[in-house]
Length: 191
Image (cartoon, rainbow, N blue to C red):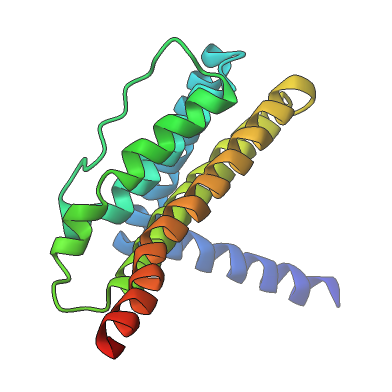
């Protein structure tokens, strides 16, 4: 007889799940889940079709995320990435860097009166965050397809390192003039 209450509890739980599944809120959640599955499947098809062009996938994913982060301040599709024939780590890193850092002046113009050093740090933080998110998504896709290894992995990781160094160099260049002019201004003031 102890089995009957367990069966009853199971039946009640199943009934509750069915009632929950029929609710309008859950229908929306189910639709979103189905859409997410479709997006992942489409991404996987694109990744498989891209084959050895993992750098192209990395580039597209990074640019999409940077666009997403820049859109509130610079509008939709702030960066229009074009795929080129050269998808080497150096070329991919150069495209990511030139497209993402190319919007610095527009970003800074929206923050007139703010500390230039802080503007530069915030901008690099913003685009670096977009790149890293896109990079990790592309890497996860490649790992899921079990193609992230050997030459593909070394190329992707080299691209990552080159982009990070590029962002560091860009920030240093933006901060350098402020540092270099301060001693010159002090010398001019003393003279």
